Length: 437
Image (cartoon, rainbow, N blue to C red; front, side):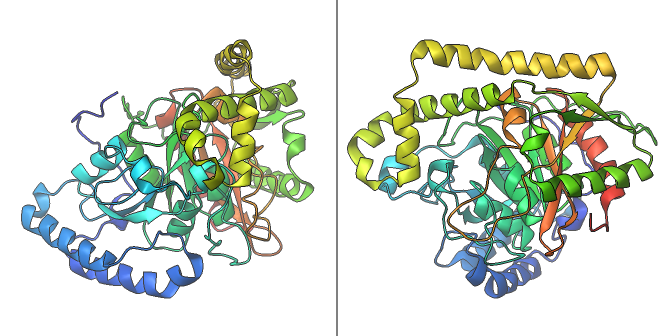
């Protein structure tokens, strides 16, 4: 799939994140923020001369586009690149100990697209090992002794700390939605396959989604317009609000008590803002959905890593080795049945929405706030069914828990209705602004 050279809509919410005429000053301010926050957070991979490089690239950009009216839409916007995407001039390590020479590849298509629109690569952000569960050093900017989530840990933390307004991530189970919730930022996971994954070291290609983190829905929508094909702007809806469905049943019961209480508070706040919210039974076979998803991850990860694992097994972390060994136990016939379940689940969710007039699903994006400790990235179970079905999701900041840790809200729309999701998400973002949940 090619991103092409289609026109980019100028969406509200982008301008506050751009440098304008003071691109050199913006790089200086970014360097100061890095000096103050990055040593504690460790969201980016180390890079000698990072800001000398960025100043050169910014100067070249300014020379190329001296007239403001001719500048590309993302002129001077710095963005982080999760270290499973290839980016020219940067080694790719995928959070692993494998030799970087083994992991080379052409620049990711999404990186090329953002650069062509004037964005500047701020650097590579920390990933768990091969976007699975073995964490890197990154800490949660809101509480350094807590995880930022995974696997897109560095990208979520970098945006939360104000080091860059945009960072790319990936999601195979919950690696955008969960860290977005833990770090208190917006996490966007588009419909499966609508954003190219070319130039990405995959974990499980049938489930991998390219996603991104931003401070707000406005910038998330602009990035979606830039990267998703096709992009179809939704018409103005005035004050029209979506009908929100809560997926009642065994899935929702997997959230912890604190998360359920917070979700009930968020629901009350949205109802007070005029939203119609109702419960709709879903995921009656949730245990089977979860098992199916995890078998696909294991089997496809083994296929991706077969050559590397055969030669470098001793360099893999125990959690990743356990995953790859589990992949050996999945017969081809079982994998085929499990893959067929993705479309079936998508159809079931769509049919339920159609029958009951639901526009969006709402749910907790994690079983609770970010857990204490850096040895685990938390549980992605609340994100898993939406990823399995390939539906677009948007995670929004939704207040804090009693300890002051960020809490979020997860929205899911029909497949291929990403633009409607973002349009409605902007209204829900406004309704939730300023509350503690």
